[in-house]
Length: 256
Image (tube, rainbow, N blue to C red):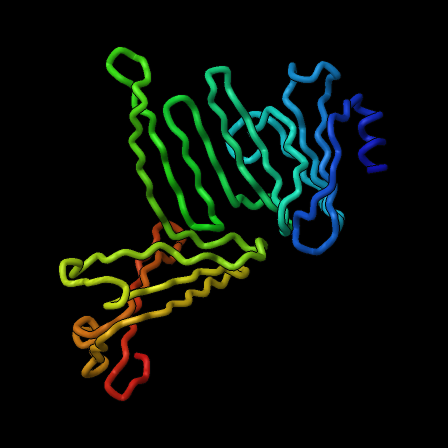
């Protein structure tokens, strides 16, 4: 803060709020200051400066698109650790948008986002791996008739490194043979995804009332048996290459 006050005095910055949150998972409180370059708050977009206890500093300013597009100072409400910094912006028509970020030495990590106006509200949580949208339908006269069309979607998301929070279960659904599926007691799947550095770990838990093993290690035998398929894209210099990995158990029980 002594560094900030020296800079603020030199540049004529006006301090609006100052509080502390633990933002990078090292157990030490980090400083968050929100300031304006004019004392007439509201006429200029604020600047948020995050100073980590480890020495890194990051400035987030209004304008543009992304975590820095805010027009108000973040709240200082503390929640459960690890903490998040919530940045928001709003419009005259009732539109608002917020993002929640944590930090590591490289900068902000997006963990949640939400937006709303008179027609919709939407949210996306990378930690819970869930997204939802609520649409507010208007009548033909232009007046809201109170009817709502709720559309929910779910997606699996790999966590950004540095969050320190285990991923929740990724959403799963029956894609083939649904008419023969009697419920989770018949067959069920739970999947976790976690990223540490450049390594992505996928943990799958299965439940099945009847196991169909592969007769041998041929691709046809694996497809005819109970099996896992992992799909991803390997990035190249110009094009991405699709990759598919299949895994199944044989009669002798090893995984192939």
